[in-house]
Amino acid sequence: MICATLSIDVVSPSPECRDLMKIRIEHLDKYFPLPAGRRLPVLEDINLEIQKGDFVMVLGQSGCGKSTLLNIIGGLIAPSSGTVQVDGQPISGPHRSITMHFQEPTLLPWLDVKDNIAFGCRIRGETDDLEYRVNEFIEMMGLSGFEKSHPAELSIGMACRVSLARALVARPEVFLLDEPFASLDTFTRSRLQEELINIWLSEGFTAVFVTHDIAEAVLLGNRIVLLGGQPCRVMDTIAIDLAYPRRLTDESFFQCKKNILESFKTSLERNAP
Image (spheres, helix red, strand yellow):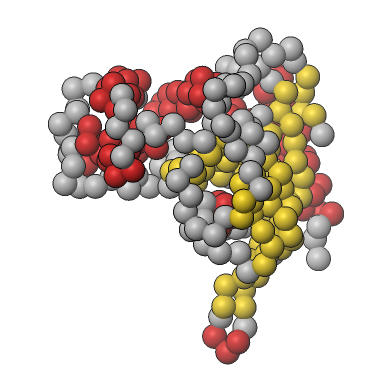
């Protein structure tokens, strides 16, 4: 299903110098055990292929299992059955090429902004040009002047920017984002969405972004995966053929959002028990 057709006037990410990663999910089920031998099914027969350099938005209602799927891709949770492979290799735990950004900033309170951003790279020994890259992201995220501030001294928006900078400074090959902007005000969210897309277009990493906001999904993604049902299944996949940067006020944007909402409603009705 093509949401809209527009000539794309922005160069798509194609960094030949990087070894980007492809994700394949096959027949994935996930359930959680309950008392008395019962179990709670959350995900059922998820089949999905994410191409190298894709920006995939995983869209669905709150509580449908989107975050669970993301955690399985990131190797933080094991599936009950089925497989997740990255470039043909099964994921059985956290992978150094996969970086996750969670719903809330997870900063170390004893480190200042600069050291929080550099922390992951230093732990992994990735220190080449680290000082330059950290300073670059501090400026890019509007954190100049706060380099020596600690998390307790930051607003939630600034803490989110620090957390995003820490994830991106490592140049991830696969970047998983779990509703990272949900708690931000409209202006901060809009700025970070724009910065994220600019970095993706430049770096070309493979991104999987969880959201329940249709407008955000259309604004950021080149493909949308609709999840729904109980247990949760893939109900539809939608290609977004709109040029970057995208504007919420454009007629093509509005039409695309409308088409997705209609597809979501139709898929729910079709998959209703």
